[in-house]
Image (cartoon, rainbow, N blue to C red; front, side, top):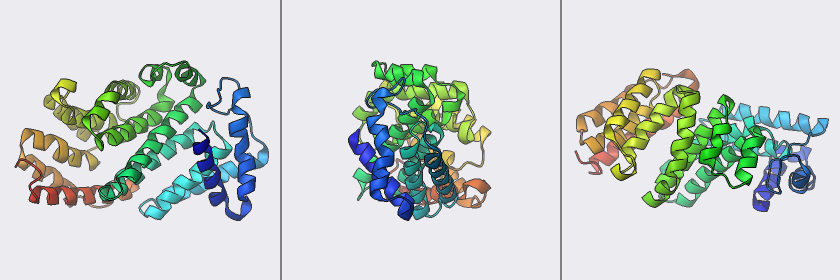
Length: 319
C-alpha cells in the first residue's frame, strides 16, 4: 500500500511541476494514508472519501482536464504516458474519483496492449506490470464507486461475487479490470489463467448483462476470444467463440480489433487459413479513420495485423 502511495506522490510532484513541490505533494497525499482508518466505510487500505478543500479540488479538476487533453493525443506514446501521469496525480488528490480510475485502467491497458505489446520480448516485466496497474486501478475504482462493494472485499468476499453490487456505472471499470487481468494472465501461462477464470467469467457476465454493446461490442468480443483461447476442459468452445465474434462484428463492424482476434485465436484452432487471410486483409484495407475517434487504436490494430502476417510467414500457424 505504501509503495502505491509513494508512486502517487512522485506522480503528483512531476505532474504539478512548479505549482506543487515534492514536499507539498507529500502533504497532499498524506491524508490518503493517515486518514483512511477514520473514514466512514474505509479500512487502512480503503478509499479515502472525505471532502477536499477548494484548492485541492481545483488542482484535481485541472489535472483531470490535462490528462483528458493528453489522452486525445494518445496516438503519441508520450502523450498517452502523460495522460496516465496526470490522472495518477489527480487521484492522489481525490481517492474517491472512480471516473478517473476508469480512465487509468483503460489507459494502462492501451499502453500495455498498444505499445509494450510490441516490445514484450524485451520488456515482459514492464508489460505485465502495466496490465497489473490497470486491473489494480479498476479494482480501486470499483471500491470508490461502491462503498458496499469495498466492504464486501474487505470482509473477504471474492470479487467474482462482489460485482453483483455494481450497477451500469461500473461497466467500464469491470470491463477494463477483466481485459487487463486476462492479458496479464495469458502472457504468463495457463495456470495463471485458470486461477482467475471464474472471476473473469463472473465479471464479464455482469458486464454483458448490464451493457452488452459497451465499447463497440466489447463483451461479445471478449467472449469470442475467451472461448477460442480456453482449452476445452476450462470451457473452451469454438462454436460459442464464433457466435460471439459474429455478434461483436454485427454490433461494431468497423472496430478492427475483432478481426485480429479472430485471425489470431479462432482461425488457427479451426485450421482455416482462408479465414485468417480474410480477417487480416479487412484490417489492412480499412482506412485509418474508419472510426474517426479511434484512429490511434486503428493504427495499433494495423500494426498487429502486420505482425500476424509475419507470424504466418514464419510458420507460427497451422496453415
